[in-house]
Amino acid sequence: MIKKIVIGITGATGAIYGVRMLQVLRTLPDWETHLVISSAGLINLKHELEMSRAELYALADVTHENKDIAATIASGGFKTEGVIIAPCSMKTLAAVAHGFGDNLISRAADVALKERRRVVLMPRETPLNLAHIRNMASVTEMGGIIYPPMPAFYNKANSIEAMVNDAVGRIFDIFGVEVEGLYTPWQGL
Image 1 (tube, rainbow, N blue to C red):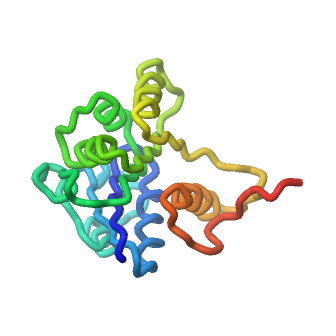
Image 2 (image 1 turned 45 degrees about the horizontal axis):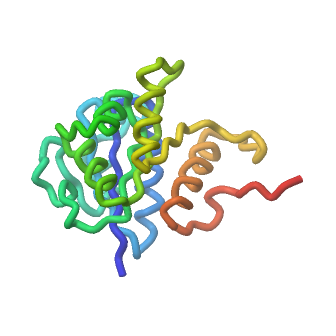
């Protein structure tokens, strides 16, 4: 049975996380990706990775426009494993925290939360102000998971790619996506 997952990419720095997720999921025949990217996300995609919209869309099984709030993923009747927003801007975090589904990314997360499906947000901002912290707490209280992409140093990653893979692998574990070699779980000393 094919499992569906929504990947949202917003305007925070770190487009590499969403792109890497799509790259990995593309190799797994039992997963179907539904991609939504914001206009600011497209700007960062071009700036950070020198990647075009067409190149990004080629990595996804299904693409949706962020303004299309009538898309399949805007309904709880459309079964998914959940939503990952990577990276997640503070604007999108605030929208999810307050149920403000004015675009497809925040609406898809809202739907997943109301259906008690997994929602993982990768906020990319530092330092955090009190509004950011409260919004993260609100999403957590609703059942969402806040996963800032903070590198683990115990695995002695020697490249940005290894650090990205570690974060992606750990998030995939939350969704039951099995990928060998993406990251090494802590084995103790």
